[in-house]
Length: 350
Ligand code: SF4
Image (tube, rainbow, N blue to C red; front, side):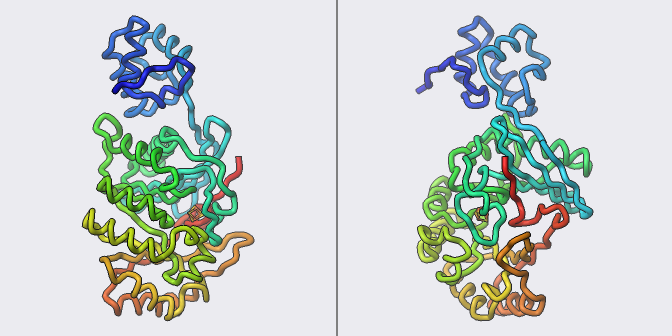
C-alpha cells in the first residue's frame, strides 16, 4: 500500500517515486515530472534542486520550498604517490567520513564507508578508536560513490569499476540503508552497476549474514576473520563476544548453501598475534566446511597502534602452510599508506 505523503520538509531523497508523484499531482504538476526529478536524483547525482535544468524554475522553487536536500561535499582530498586518493566527505550535519579510490590498470576500486565511526572497536583499527557516531543514510552512501566517480574520471580517465564496503563502519549493522544504497547503485533507473562488482565486508555479524543469505545477496561477501582462535579473536575483535566463531561458521555454512558462493576471508597478519604456524593450522581447520579464498593483508602500523606488521619470513611460512592445504590465498598489496588511506587507517572526527 502506498504510504501517505507528509509535507514536513522531508529530505527529497528519503521518499519513494510514488510519493514524489503524489506530491507533484497535489501541486497541479504532471505526474511524469517525477521520473525526470528521479533521474536527477538517482542517475545524475545532482547536489541541489537548481541543477535540475529540464525542470522549470517555478517547480524547482516549489521543490526547494517543500523538501530539504541533504547534500554531501568533498571536504578534503589527499593524493598518494601510488595514485590512491583519499577523501573526507562532509555530511549535511557536519559529520565527516572517509572514502578511498584505488586505481589499478583500467580498474578503479572505491572503498566506501557505511557508518560515521564504528561501534565494534577492533583493536587494530583506527576507525574503531572513534566509537560509533551514527548510521549513514543510503543517500549519503550513494553520494560517496557519485562524488568519487566524478573525481576518478578526472584523476584516472576512468570511472569507478568496483565498490568495496570496507571503509568506516560495519555495513551489516546499518543493514537497511546499505541494502537500499546497493539497490540504488545497481538499479536500471539508478547507476546500473553490476552487483558482482560490489563487495560487502563484515566483521562477522551472524544475524546479518543469515539475512543476506535469505535475500540471496547478489554481491560479493568478505568476512574479516583475522583469527580462527576464539581467545585471540575476542581480544582483537570484541564483536566475537556476541558473534562467536562457532556461530559465524554456522552462518557461513548457511550462506554457502543458500548462495553457492565461496567464502572470502580477510586476514590481517599481526606479528606474534595471529601469524604463527598454530594460527595457520586453526585457520585451515576453520575453513573446512566451505570453499574459501583467503586474502592476506599486511598490517599498516598507525600512530599509537598496539600491533606490528608480521616479519616477511613469518608471513611466507603462514601462506605456504595454507597453500599446502590447497587453500586459495591472495596477498593484498597495501596502497595509500603515505596518506593514511590503507586498510584500518581511516579515522575522522567531525
Ligand atoms: S575494522 Fe571495520 S568493523 Fe572493526 S572497528 Fe574498524 S571499521 Fe569497525
